[in-house]
Image (tube, rainbow, N blue to C red; front, side, top):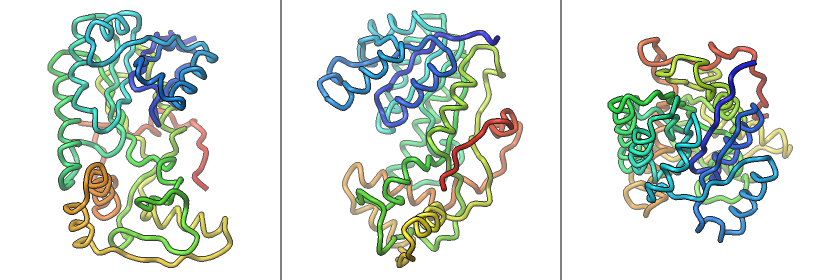
Amino acid sequence: MAEKSRVLVIGSTGSIGKFIVEASVKFGHPTFALVRESSLSDPAKANIAEGFKSLGVKLVHGDVYDQESLLTAIKQVDVVISVVAQQQVAIQDKIVAAIKAAGNIKRFLPSEFGNDGERHHAVEPAKTVYDTKTKIRRLVEAEGIPYTHVVSNACSGYHLSNLSQPGATAPPRDKVVILGDGNAKETNRLYECVVVYLGIISPSGQIVNVLFMYLVEERTYGCICLLLMSFWERKIGKGLERAYVPEEEVLKNIQEAAFPQNVILAVLHSVFVKGEQANFEIKPSFGVEALELYPNVKYTTVD
């Protein structure tokens, strides 16, 4: 039996965080969730926290901005997994400082979901987000903290709710908007696939602790919008009208949009127009493809 790690999840009630917590429990790790008191005033997050308790998760009240509570939480565990929201990536320097002060952490997984921060040509404001992730990587390395960076690329669970149609609350039934010409390739995964890997790599000593995990199932997919649309058309039994948005118009829309829509559009431009999740080769010098390590993992397909 592999050694089990005591795992702290920061950002536990977020859209990905709750899956990470559940996966950690599933793999038998004593699991702790950092929860802000203010979050419990939100009924939805309070319900998530109650669900954690029913799974045996220990709720630790604290805040990333409260170094004392953060340090107290970190001293109780072996592994820290950060899944803070995209706009909070920069505050992970506070987590790094607390981990360094605690001196007991065997593995740190910073919030790395989405594109690789070191292999992109994204426009602003997404560029700043990706560059900030890279700064956190360098900080972790400089502090000598054991780490694993998990680059999951696109999570189809995010795109499935509306077929990646900005502003839509449900999948379209008549018309779908496609950014660019639809020829850019991407990779995509369900949230479940991401948490499987996080559950496997969290125990200390299982893999080299300075390893990038690229969650890339295959690189032959076409545009995620087109792929999901083809699935959706089969489900609803009808074809959808395709409306293509030229790159020039996408860039103009990014400049004119307010936050956070401008960030979302800039990310979509990087993924759907530039195809920056599938335009480089994964080399041993910086990364490894997760399927090479875990070829027997079974997936729930998007279809």
